[in-house]
Length: 288
Image (cartoon, rainbow, N blue to C red; front, top):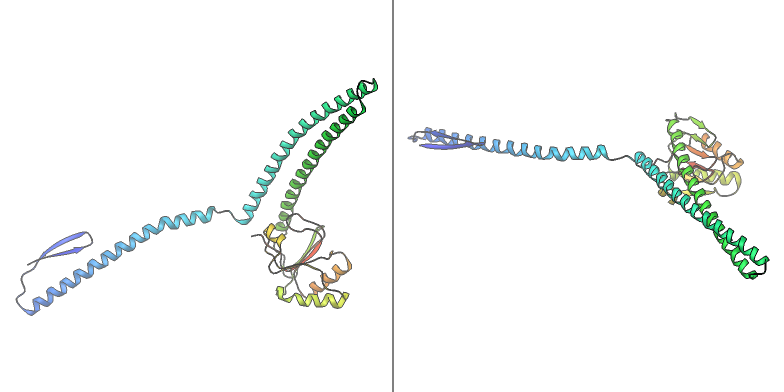
């Protein structure tokens, strides 16, 4: 009797005598069962290996995509560079336009001077001179408008660079120890040890109302539109419209420090970080 046993991709032929008793039948059945189990194990191993091989390129692609994906900070720096470049290109186009307007202005002034001579000689009317004066004023306005737009471009570039410099200074300050405080010309940062939550704001409001008999001037409670535009996570903080060096601001800062509540007090505007003097109650907002 010949039996074919397939294991993996190898097919084996086994010649067995025809069973003549029950013992032989049992042995034959056991052999067939073992052969079937071996085949199934081989097929499962091959399938698992194929799945692993198929998943490796996918995992590699995911790993490469994660490693090449820019982080929020890198992306923001790239956007700043692109903005500065675009603004410089815009400014260069304005300079060309200004040259054209200056030429037109010089031409209009020359025509006006000629018109005045002709008017003095009685060859043209006063209206012709007035028309020339209007043309000169119009060309001057064009030059002034270009100058204004160029100054605006310079201001935008300066604000962008100032914003980047402010973030570098904040990053250089590094982690502030628990209960530590940093003072600069622009801001004060206090790393209070208390567990702060926006739901505790009522305590600060109660203190201020009791001390000054008026509500706490909250400008932004939680996330605001300005924070969305600047990509700042402000969900667990509030901004109070008080100058940190004023009497009310000083009293609020003293209360926050006495209770271990973290804060950032800005003395001036920092583009991309603070619109003006105010007290940020809570942990510093991180970019996302």
